[in-house]
Amino acid sequence: MAHATVPAELYEDNTREDPRHRSPLVLGGHDLAGISDAICGVVERPMPKVWYLAMAVSLTALALLGVCIGYLFLTGTGTWGLNSPVNWGWAIVNFVWWVGIGHAGTLISAILYLFRQKWRTGINRAAEAMTIFAVICAGTFPGIHVGRVWMAYYLAPIPNQMDMWPQFRSPLLWDVFAVNTYFTVSLLFWYMGLVPDLATLRDRAKTRVRQIAYGLFSLGWRGSNRAWHRYERAYLILAALATPLVLSVHSVVSFDFAVSQIPGWHTTIFPPYFVAGAIFSGFAMVLTLLVPCRKLFGLEDFITRRHIENMNKVILATGTMVGYAYGTEFFIAWYSGVEVEQFTFLARARGHYAWAYWTMITCNVITPQIFWLKSMRTNLWVTFIASIFVNIGMWFERFVIIITSLSADFLPSSWDYYRPTWVDVGTYVGSLGLFMTLFLLFCRYLPMVAISEVKATKVQQEHQEHNARVQEAAFAAALGAPAGGDA
Image (cartoon, rainbow, N blue to C red):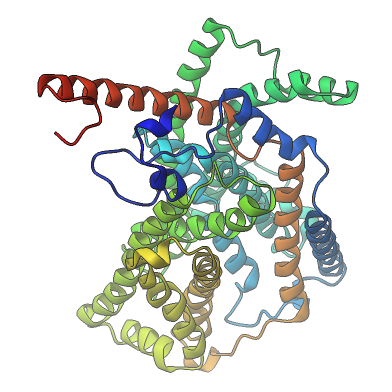
């Protein structure tokens, strides 16, 4: 039906640009029932063998996380590679990296929704889930890096038996409010979008357990006009609330460094620089997850090459911003005239940690530049490999910022070289296992693609094509030629 207006080649490769036709975002010629069958089928069918292999690897890494945390609790933070003056090591590096990973989900969900960008509908559900799981991984590290874990409640903004009241001028306390607010709003936003789709799974469930489980979490959804009206209003309000979080949360995280006097940290460029980097790494992680998942679960008609190309454009833009920020940091250090600041940045590029700095530059600045080429933006193998490099580069960015400034502070007699231990490495690998375990369970039991939103996009797509046919016929009639002719 739709193919009569939109050329067949746009359905085969919807990354082609044709000013006469809007490229479709839903391929495969599915009707509304077919969309439900294709997306719900991922949950209803047995998982492929690769899923079980990935789950086994993830659970192994998760067990390693438990071993490392248990060993840490028994021996203390001395089992990490910390020294004086490097009192922040991999724990804070990983915390900031995981918080950054979570930013793309909120951007895709909230900001693109407010701007009515329909291409978000194929990827927003998985991106939102990724956000929540990344924040869970991030929240692990502040709780275990305090040393005396039985006093971890000191992190909470409450008075304690020692009469040590919360220090509201501390950016570490700002982190508590920012990250918890971000997690709460993201979870509500994700769950709100899931409700209609959970009702679809409830109505299709073949077993009593599934009917009860999905029925409970779908909150009695019946799809009435009143329910849809209130759902859309609530979803819009949550999107409006979530949008400032994209800019504020990672800005607050950057204040951990920017409000201090440590050389290389005390700079006002950190908030916008961290936000751009967070979106950069978040989109890269979305691609790392969705490029294999779309193939593994047969979702190519809903997560199309156009979605992937658009995300690569965002990576190119934010990667260029991050590269500009790197250059600006050197300019600020030179322009300040402060010798300690100048030494810090020269040491990053030429000192003991130069290997980490140039790894960061290669992955974050050079790698995204391949996406200037359309053939690279639409190549799945290139996209997958580049997204992994970006994630590696963003981790090294956090490492460079934290470790290089701490290891060479104002007092040369205290300088020391930081080396991680096996517990540091195991804890990080374990956090990856926690993240992948949660994501694989999400793929198993919840719809990876927003069914109701994809259906709305499909209906709008067909409506636009119908209007195009009517306008084409009217134009042809005005010229006295048959519709679809060469007049």
